Image (cartoon, rainbow, N blue to C red; front, side, top):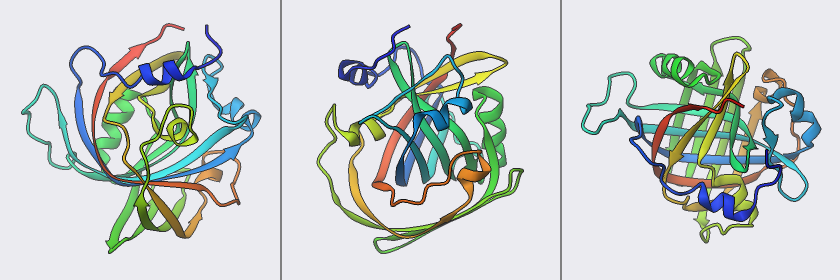
Length: 249
């Protein structure tokens, strides 16, 4: 198994996969909050078959709140399902790779749709939780509040101001490493799985943190982060999702 990811691998992951996706989603009002973290602190929480992806000598931990809409199943033209077509979501994540293919590992995902939580747990084996989530925008300010309804109980309150447009992230840059991710990894009963996603490159903007208070990391068994996070904002993005593939690692 390859132990290093090259820029060419990261670019290759952006190509649209073959076959038919199983779901379409729109993501928006999305904030990336990233902190550097020591790789050894994450290693016990991630399957050994996955290698932790690093940049500038560090692993990275992210909290990402956003909203979703236009969620529909493929083939095309299947109408959205009530209670499933839109929701707010938040994920806690890091970055991993398997055999040279970089992707995302989720420590937790929260959503305010019980139907979506059930489907993601059942078909994608993802650690979703039911939560009460409120998102409001006032001009260039967004207020986001979350209260997880399931154990381990946790809360988050974050507000940010949307800033100016950034140049498109280029391979080799920190912004590319942190945001341009085109698959997710998950595991069940010792088996490793990967699902591909496809979207256009992120159109990132600056963001300024106004307020942040959360115990989500502690609830997920992760080290608390006290420093100022690296922020990126994205207004909207259309995403297609493919079925899980058993990697038989």
